[in-house]
Length: 182
Image 1 (cartoon, one colour):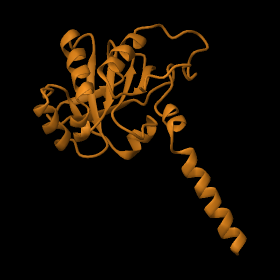
Image 2 (tube, rainbow, N blue to C red):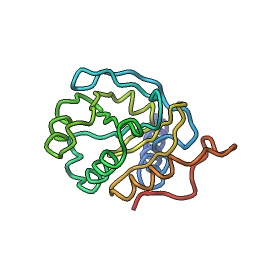
Image 3 (tube, one colour):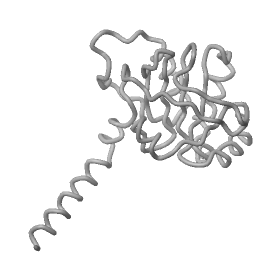
């Protein structure tokens, strides 16, 4: 009995180690070239949002009211929104729960025009996202074009440039040799 309990506690301890630290965060998200989940959700304004997008790339931004703690990410979102017409880049903010709190914070931050959809723990899990803010670019073909935890505006800009690159044969699902987390 004591051996069984020790084995269970040891296994749980190993599981906790595997889920923490920078190595685990590097494995978060979906790898470039993987197929992203298809979904349709109603945003906080009552409009239907879809992923993958009908045309062009889409930035699925996993965030909530805590985005106000990342002013550089907010600046990066503003830059992407202002630099690229909505026809060229669709940006959707996905929360882990109710969208109202995130929508009001985005409004305070000058991003009221970004659609905010109420996601769920299950949706986050489907994208393999555990920490926020997390950015995933999805192409109209449903493939992940770029994916990373973001803390700075330059990371969003770099990820956007990566998203424009063609996915090479054999690259699908392979983890990059670089990371954007500073």
